[in-house]
Image (cartoon, rainbow, N blue to C red):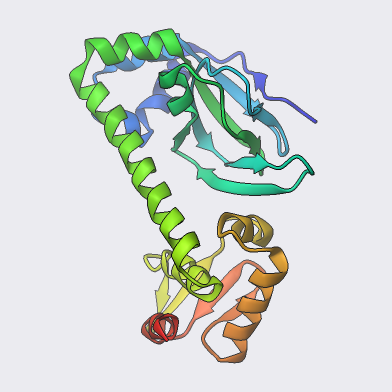
Amino acid sequence: MSTPQIMDTPQITVADVLTDLPLFNGIDRAVVARLANGANELDAPRGATVFRRGQSATGMHILVHGQVKLTLRSSNGDERIMEVVGGGQTFGEAAMFLGRPYLADAETVVDSRLLHVAKDTLLAEIRADSEFSQKVIANLSERLYRHVANLEICMLSSGVRRVIRYLLSHESEDRFDGELHITLPTKKWIIASSLNLTQEHFSRILHALVRDDLIQVDGRQVRIPDASRLREYAVH
């Protein structure tokens, strides 16, 4: 299995990449420059291991572009995807702040580029800059809120409701004459696992929604003729 490779990239490039990410929007350039000093840019091909459960956290990972899945694995090899991290998002910082080992495996789903900001560099800026520390807290809080919301869905909702809610979470995507057209952001088996469904169960639910003329599916393209009708279907 491949591992991420540190890239020999000029510091200004790393600083520019940091500036373009949501977490660092509006942060003073001097702070960004110091963070860039303690950052490595990692080129990670599909299937690369970013870290493994039990490893010590040495910093915060930032996904510049690509996808990373955070996975729990049972003793018999079964896996449960906790989260699929997308471009511009961070991961792994909770273990770093707590000084505890990672609880999950992190692996790239597609060719990806990441930044790793060293723990000492990050903590120094959090202590020195209140605006930056507030952004980091807000970022962590948003992820915690999202995890609790996802846990509620998985524990209290049927499989059908989980899938419909997932589809409708993309409601901001393209609309044509009242129709909603979405592109599934990753492979269907990964989406199924993140919804605590088997791939077979996920496929059966999609087929049932297609049969009832609620959606149309072509690979990763999904057409929803009437989002309100699909939403009402989830209630019954």
